[in-house]
Image 1 (cartoon, rainbow, N blue to C red):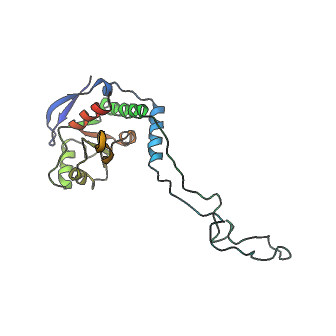
Image 2: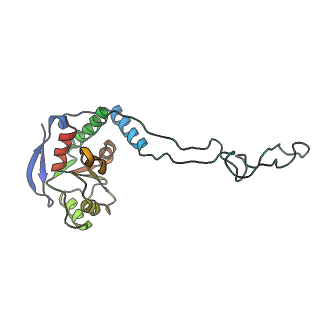
Image 3: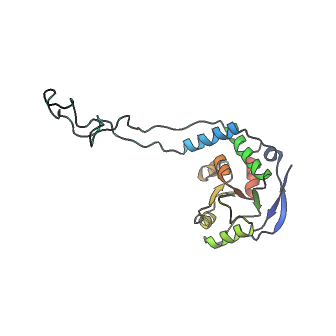
Length: 220
């Protein structure tokens, strides 16, 4: 099992945490990670885009000019795709982009990506990530103390949703805040981090309690 130092908000070591074997030894193939991320991105699409075909745009009910003896190409409607204000050829319609990845595969991909971050030294475990007021300065000072301020993309993982903490980080363009997995009604109210969140992040800042919740809910 791997050990990771636990640091306080001012960057001092206050202890260590031992990763469970389910996380430390997790492996995910490139194919599994790719399939999981593609499914996550596809499932985030609303699929509500729509355009009108020639039968749906208004007008064009009358033949614009007679069929023969005009010297021009024959036309039946001014709402054909090649006319201005005409319908669109092969118009897009609302559709469902959802792709399914079974729960065991999805969890394996997330744990594999998390293990890769820990193995590469890109994971920082904090004693707690809680702020008294919704101000950005304390969040910036914490990132500086933990040597994360210069990272291009930082993923912050909280044990549960906390509005004040979300507001502290939301003005920082390089920081994404997510929560650890939960059970029951609480799970529906949280933005749980995904495999894509881990892969696009250069550094991961995770609360000690959030790591414990990941091991409790997913690492079984």
